[in-house]
Amino acid sequence: MIGSFRNKGLKRFAETGDPSKLASENVKRVTNILRAMVAAEKPEHLDLPGFKLHRLKGADKNRYAIWVSGNYRITFAWDGTDAIDIDLEDYH
Image 1 (spheres, rainbow, N blue to C red):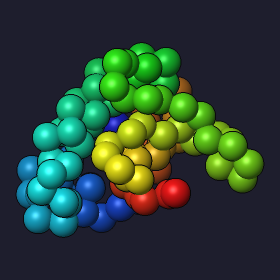
Image 2 (image 1 turned 90 degrees about the vertical axis):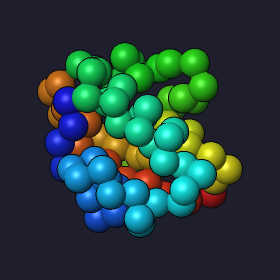
Image 3 (image 1 turned 120 degrees about the vertical axis):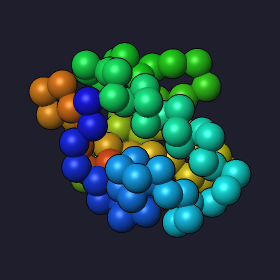
Image 4 (image 1 turned 90 degrees about the horizontal axis):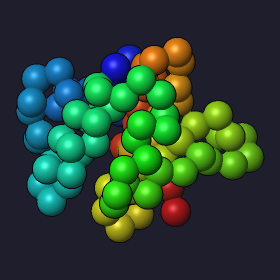
């Protein structure tokens, strides 16, 4: 399940399907990742081929990342059965 979002463009896309704030080359990939997040009951369910799921380190050690393209990742935390604080960021 999906909880809260940090990124307003990503939230708009998830809630309304409006991709105007996302890079057009990332829309299909982001769609697939968000669909997988809705179906997942724990972060390990997102360890799918091509997602490159990994736990972040340091101050963000309670967050996870999934590769979107280039330096872009969807990052998120996990609470119970929900992905929360979901963000789309260039973190490298």
